[in-house]
Amino acid sequence: MELRILKYFLAIAREGSIIKAAETLYITQPTLSRQIIDLEDQLGTKLLVRGNKNKKITLTEDGIRFRKRAEEIVELAERTEMEFKTQSEEISGDIYIGGGETDSMRFIAKTMIKLQKQYPNIRFHLYSGNADDITEKLDNGLLDFGVLIGPASLENYNYLKFPTTDIWGLLMKKNSSMASKKYIKINDLENIPLIVSNQSLVENQIAGWGIKDFSKLNIVGTYNLVFNASLMVDEGFGYALCLDKLVNTSCESTLCFKPLSPILEVNLDIIWKKNQVFSKAATKFLEFLAIEFNQK
Image (cartoon, rainbow, N blue to C red):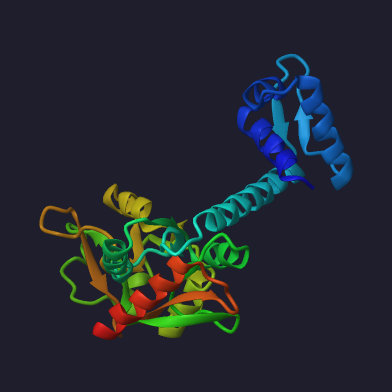
């Protein structure tokens, strides 16, 4: 399976038309059609649904799955090519870091600043997602490092522990009836509309705190990144169960955060694949990060 054919397929998926894709690729429409038919024959499945009247192209279910894989393969190939092109005595290149939302990403930012002052040709690329997203991209070679929040399975990875922890609590409107509370107890959560993280490990964390049966809670929505959840809270849709220091709760904000009691803390780890062969830039980043962690 050639990279060129994968790029052809992605162009069609992007343009929604074989004719338009052929124009952007500077090849003829019959040639492009033939290449895609050969690709479908090779995979043994249909990837495209070809419209009759407007000739609009849509992806089949297999086409949608193949698009994701094709994007990952092309991205990885381009990253690999770039790493070798920039390989020299000079330390430069790209570092890819994924992570969940946490205030502890400030450690990453401080490390970036110090590293880039010494090696100005290093570039950083951040990807936000939950633990499932991060580990998938890490395993597929699309990230160099991943930041995981809370308990995680680390046997397949090397890791450094952050010198800080995050705490769970409830994000609410300042005019809420519970805003006067210093802490949020288990029974406070029983009769309110809750917006919770859809990360697979979160339910286990909260269960360890004391809530054994999530079905008894009034969960009105889920989120994977907390900013949009905070907008739902601000509009009065519900209360968000989330980590501290991710949403503005200053005096100008309409929101406030109340920690759970007993306090529910979570550890953080930055992970990378075992036997990972790092670029010079990624190796330096890890060295600088270890120093940053030890300073705290």
